[in-house]
Length: 342
Ligand code: KG4
Ligand code: ZN
Image (tube, rainbow, N blue to C red; front, side, top):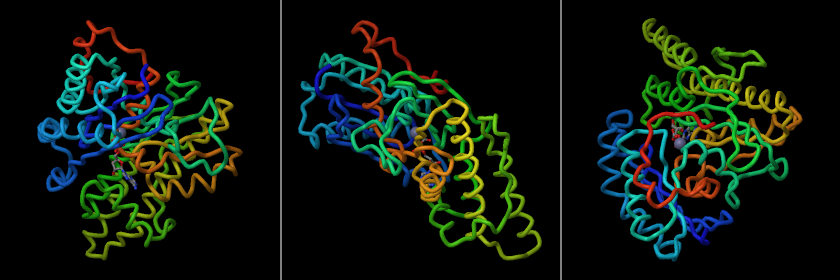
């Protein structure tokens, strides 16, 4: 592999391109967000996302190469997200990567989006390590708008699924609760902000699938509990304590995420626990991880916020661990909308 990798990510509403070195140093990490485009509809509109990726991908890749001071001819490997994600959106980034690789002769690797999230911490300065350096094997929580899963990462490229969500992803619950409270999309960061003025113990929302041996998640009941609480107050003509609702809801999510991540580490005899994905940017989750991991006898690691939400540096990073495809096979790679990382 040459010294430089180009990553391309287009699975949802961010068109992103990044250039990293083979040892994981980030030279450029360009993210063009479509959030303002989708916000007026309260969520991502897949067709709009695809069209927008198409309009931006070329400029975003060019900007990443130029910021890194690297020409396409110097890129030894191109890594693009293959899935899971919005099919049309994925198709744009992946086909663009195929074309670039065909033209430049670079190797092409297709990357699982969640592999990007759970290995972003391995990029140089990729994380905050309040309890010491990261060692393998580690337990990784991938928690975003599309995923809430626990993995055992025994080495780069070696993963085992320990738990998955049975219904909504945690980020999806954040976004839906935000909508109930009348906050703009995407709601996770808005809830994070509002919750700072609220009382985490004000309302006892449920902690779903509490059992210590159960590493699966479920957030749909919690989301409904918040909506019912809100609707009952509205029907009774009472004021809505939005900050307390935000803080108490967020506390329930954080509580479940950390409890299960710690249980996963204990059940697998692992000391190091990593949080990754968009929801891992949540300030309360980060604070509680730092406070509680040592009490559980564990070392907590926080992926840097810019590498938590969707980006292409993590895709390039994960692309280092995958085998490149033969030139002739490249045209046969197809995007996929869903799928487990095993
Ligand atoms: O990883 P990501 O950018 O995209 C997916 O792969 O889904 O995650 C996006 C999700 C959204 O649901 C967003 O509301 C949530 O991450 N999110 C947050 C925060 N920042 C982003 N949730 C809670 N607190 C935050 N600070
Ligand atoms: Zn993601």
